[in-house]
Amino acid sequence: MSFEEKTKETVSSLKCQNCGAILHYAPGTNSLKCEYCGTVNTIEEEATPQGIHAFDYDAFITDLQRHTEHTEQAVVVKCTSCGASTTMLPNVTADACPFCASPLVVQQGAATAVLQPHYVLPFAVDDKEAGKFFQQWMSKLWFAPSDLVKKVKDRSYHQLKGIYIPHWSYDTDTVTSYSGQRGEYYYTTETYTEEVNGRTETRTRQVRHTAWYNTSGVVDNTFRDVLVSASPSLPRKMAEILEPWHLDQLKAYDGRYLSGFRAELYQTDAEQGLLIAKKRMDPIIRDEICNDIGGDEQSIDSYKVAYNELGLKYILLPVWLSAYRYNNKLYHFVVNANTGEVTGDRPYSWTKIVGLIVLIIAIVWVLYVCFAQPE
Image (cartoon, rainbow, N blue to C red; front, side, top):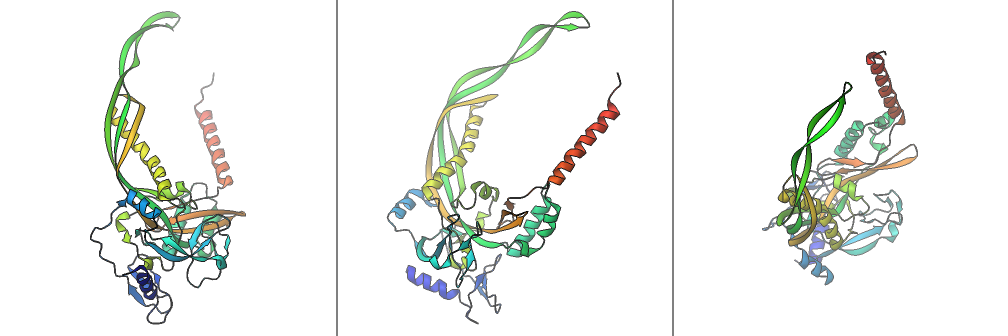
């Protein structure tokens, strides 16, 4: 089936056969649902003999350069405030950026050929569940303002927007040659003098030393699904806090899973993503080197990593984005729509912080009064 035929088939499958409205994907199911008449259509999955697998990295980059990778048409609008490029929902005439809440100039949206992801992780958490996860998160935060904890129970206080965030997932088997030093402890007995009750006494003590020995070797590491967010709109540290994801639930890309949601286009390309992935792998490789060196202390002089069998997947991961205003300041938060993990910005109650400090000072003072011995 040609790409044009596949696109036409997908568009046709998104229309409700009963009333003609657009069907939306129902989170946590394998179905499309009509919000008007309740009609449910099951998404028939295509057979994938190889299952979920990574694609050869070098071949992928070559295909991109030759413009032979699979693409699809989407209406894309770029936010003039934060620069995020997202797809638009059908029949939308006014909208706001899901990342910075700035108004979008919908009329400037243009049909664009975008790279088709390999896999998509469908929404498993709906907006109501996401709201509950956010409320639970907020209620557990230390020093959160009490009035804010009450306000977030009102769903109108924070409107959630479902969006798929682009990610690169890297697989590789590394072989690392290194040189370094192994430190081994040994002890000597040292004699010293000390004044005790006006008398000089000679005593001994054990003193620790470290003997260093040159060493070298080779270590192997296997990395699977090293994730890199391809969206600078969602801070990378925030994206990493949302991990882990249930990547065993990935589905072969099907545009129907995106119906009713938006998707951001990647802004960090696969080559830039690989550099970030290598930085994420580096501490693990260094730990493996230290384990191989052994001894009581380790020092790494140099090491060289070979990244073999390098593969990648271009995937879309689901999140609920929202923001709330407190004391005239905007705070953003994000909910992992696969696991319910929550992270985001938050305000602090200085009244609670000062109260705790005063309480600690009071306890210390009471303990001092009770246990201090008079001269």
